[in-house]
Length: 330
Ligand SMILES: *[C@@H]1O[C@H](CO)[C@@H](O)[C@H](O)[C@H]1NC(C)=O
Ligand SMILES: *[C@@H]1O[C@H](CO)[C@@H](O)[C@H](O)[C@H]1NC(C)=O
Image (cartoon, rainbow, N blue to C red; front, side, top):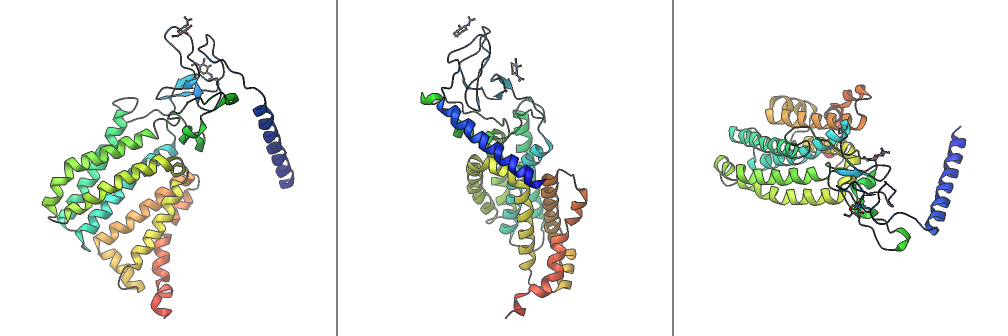
């Protein structure tokens, strides 16, 4: 059975290669100017827009918020974002939130929560939530917390700029547009809003609450957001497909790192220390939450039993710390 499917797969692939080879040596024909009845456009993203006088425009990029359908007409993006899309957006919201919380925690330089630090956490949380709400309101349908989108079909959809066709080598057709509207642009809007709201709200509050050190978390965020925006521009599509695994792997690593930094590595102290200290509990549950988030996004809750794995990395560390303690190896 497996043999057969592999052979047929290979045959199909060969067929595909030959057909593309043949078609690239043939002339590609398409209607160049505007047309009265819809006709195909070359490339993956070129489409025709309906003009006010009833004819279709020459092949080119669809307007923002539109994407070409299989017959090359630019159609309004009116799909519902999928479960996975929402989790992707949630992940992009979690990134700056986690960054803020870690920065505030670092700048407080305390092992226990104080009132000021908790207030700063709250402010950072409100900032991010406000930025997320505003971003959702701005995008179609305007003024609602819902968005309409174009389905992501494959990785290329995130990089239409790499897919401008050059039919018959007569010159490139520029059809670059946001094919995954609005999943790509909404992130830029969101991060910009985060930065603006942070500068408006927190710059004067944090120096009051944590004099001297409070500013550090803001300065570092002013580097963090541009880096985040740049990496989204370049890596957006890759992150879209891999974020559940990024979340799972990094939460496991950071969970182990957190335990490894505890002074007393005995099983009892790790266990009791976590239960007694509010900050440790929050960090532990934060890790569990991220872990669950990654698992749910990766499996789309097809295997709910996997959620039982959530506490596993922490338990594993606590139970095996006795054996992995470096002092045993020296
Ligand atoms: C519509 O307008 C375009 C240019 O604006 C023109 O090329 C085309 O012929 C017009 N179509 C009709 C049916 O008038
Ligand atoms: C593409 O859109 C055009 C215009 O809205 C419509 O006439 C056509 O049937 C659509 N094609 C498909 C395959 O849905």
